[in-house]
Image 1: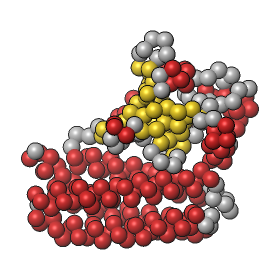
Image 2: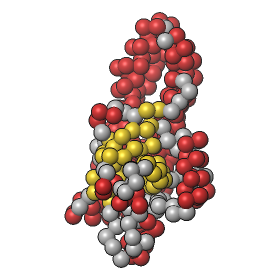
Image 3: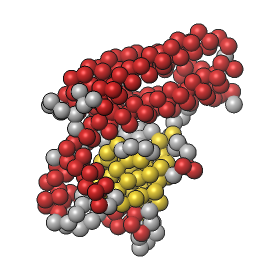
Image 4: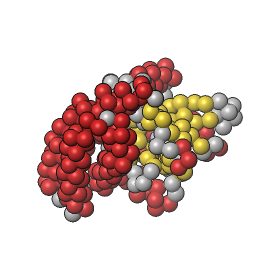
Length: 286
């Protein structure tokens, strides 16, 4: 999704809506991948927040593109991070510190080609700009941890994480449906990043959240066992999706995404029904 929404009042409207709705916005950006990027002014030292479209990427980073809508000038946020590369990222669920790294050479060209493949509007911006449009990796700083969740309770936090998975999977399904007879490079990355994120989430639940709840709520044991088995089943489906993506088999990948969606939705619904009251009760007792 092309980014850099220039008018200040419109930017502020998007920022307010994004924060109020945990990353969901309406209008022309509804259903897109959007984050809030806060940079430090190169001259003033003041914080500046801008909504930008992003691309998932390998590892603990995302990519943003300094298109400025095809302007011949780099956007202000890009000039800021050149001077001060430490930035704050808001994903709609997590807020974390990141280091901005400008991609160069072949790495930049491959990343931009993936962006164009996902949305041809980037190519039009490049044609208009008359400059090489920078691609920037936002690399999560390890010491900042997984990020802060702006939630009123532990139960709300788990719902927000689940909703982020639901939105991303819906985006992937939509992209696959419109992708024709091939799996583009960016779509393959999107699928694999989603798979890894889901694996990490379930591993965290199995090793930290479930033991914590089991210690305080012995009656949780049957629910825990069901959720553990569902995690194993979903891991099998994730593995099948990974294989289909690696084989670049669009029809099989679409079928696996549908299977994963159906079982994951049921799992998330059950988990929320069972865990939210326990999490909120445990949080109130601490």
